[in-house]
Length: 152
Image (cartoon, rainbow, N blue to C red; front, side, top):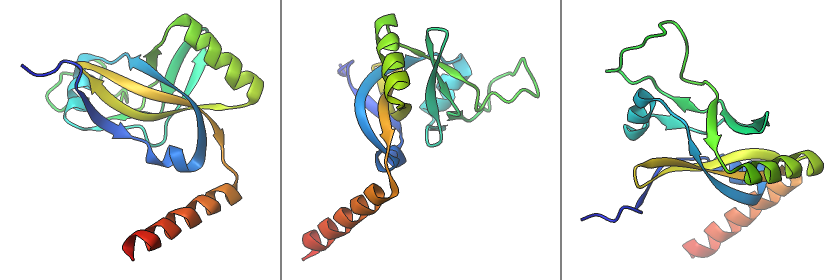
């Protein structure tokens, strides 16, 4: 019998670690329809250009891409559901904590990875601060130096 707590990585936002300084991380569930979850299981999911926001005490993910499932019947033809806003499932206290941090310190909410925990899709979101150009250049220099040291 397989371990139910196994996690399978579905999507990762590697660019977020380069563009932002990740301060706090949270794990959130995500609300999807049946055909969307089948498409995610097939590997057609991207969080590369998306971000999170809070509206009326609820947390949402904007611009996450889920390809339409080919075998699903669409009731709403012509409506683009691939990049719709998707609700994140967090506790009310967590949402309030995130909202306060974002508003007071002028931070942003960025998804870092999406994975299956058992049969549920989870999204790891991080409260992040944007890096300056010189910070990015410094990160590139460190990475190049480590590559040179490891190849010798």
